[in-house]
Image (spheres, rainbow, N blue to C red):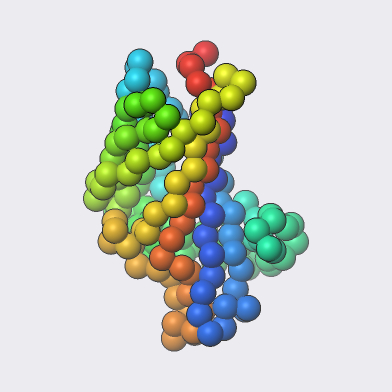
Length: 164
């Protein structure tokens, strides 16, 4: 496991979006290997887990029932990330100044993804938003599409700038 955090944010959409929740997912465990400017980050698909629902962009405990949480985990692994078929999520890139340039592999497809970086207090932080459909991931939907997840996610991470 890496001394850092990795979060994924999703947002609801659709006519009945008030019935759903914006979500904050936590990736744990994950591994980051640095070799100079080269950086490789990876995790198992089933390491992407629900941390909390959000209200107004703020993580809020107690909004989801145990059944809701189980259903979200099942849908995330089986339908969205297809963990049985593609168990590993991987990013391979290079630190180039104030950005990370590389390829993100999701659901067996690799696509270029550049991530702006900041350095502060020995930490390397980044945030990027992208459309999962570019990796062939269809946005989750329910109630005949009246409740769905937007075709965008935001990934935020905070890592040690140098290996320990």
